[in-house]
Amino acid sequence: MIGISHYLILSGLLFSIGFMGVLRRKNLLMLFFATEVMLNAVNIAFAAIGNYYGDLSGQMFAFFIIAVAASEVAVGLGLLIILYKKYHTLDLDVISTMKG
Amino acid sequence: MYEFIAFYIFAISTVILFSITVFSKNVLYSMTSLAAGMVMISGFFFLLGADFLGVVQLIVYVGAVMALYAFAMMFFDTTKDVKEKYNSPRLVFLLGGLMAVVFVIIFSAPIIGENLQVLSPITDGVGNAQAVGKVLFTKYLIPFEVAAIMLLVAMVAGIILAGKKMDKSLTTTVLPLVDKESEDEILKKESR
Image (cartoon, rainbow over all chains, first blue to last red; front, side, top):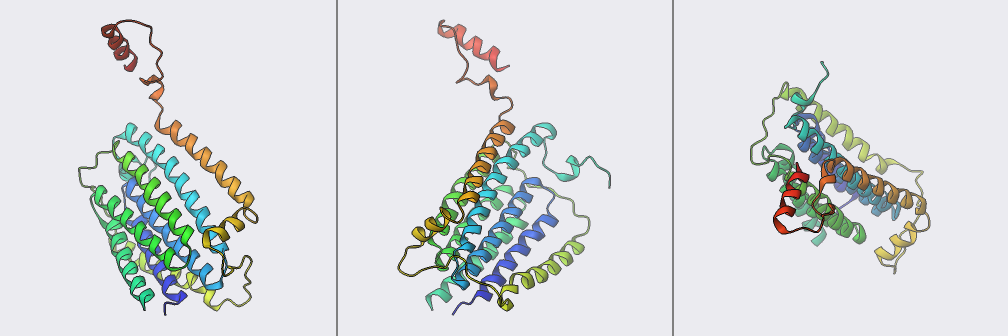
């Protein structure tokens, strides 16, 4: 039988894939994709823990995470379009203005 | 047995698809594999008995969010491969591996937790969507309303940020009643 540990280990694995993407990527659009991966991994963990305890709160938190992710994408893509109009690239090395 | 097979199919495919998302050089490949991975993730929700959450995942993530990304692709040049300069790839892999260990420990912490109590229990004989609706509109009503306001604010912000130059749109311009040729000239002047 599939226990909660399977789901949690899978969720940790997916989260670390997304985290590695956030660390590794220099393109802003790819950074957005990596954050989506991380949010989805956390959703799996919430649903699995809720199922394990027979509690609906886990699913509720997953719903609110989905709502936050949707609004994050709406605002973030607007900002990306403005950045692209200004710099004609989404590379962080080009966009960054601070030294260090 | 079926749960076992389904879990491993979904697990392997999500890990592979999200790895493609993170490590691919082409934006279109990574977007497509992200959408496919989200479909597979909704499979986990159906396995866990969270039917409504799985449907919401399919509609909101695969439907709305990925369509939004696909529309945003029109503004960017996606045919070229993404060129990135890596300063210290070894350090990134070391940090990523360490964080993986830390996250596995954090996420598996509820296994050893003892003084946890169930606040809104799943009752038998009630469908998942019904139970979710009851809890959402009683206990989580205020967070639900706040989430609605947040989505409205995000929608307004997205429209304003992306549509700065859209005040000279063709649909909102009131044209005087003139013949076809001069109408086209007015539209050209307006769009400048």
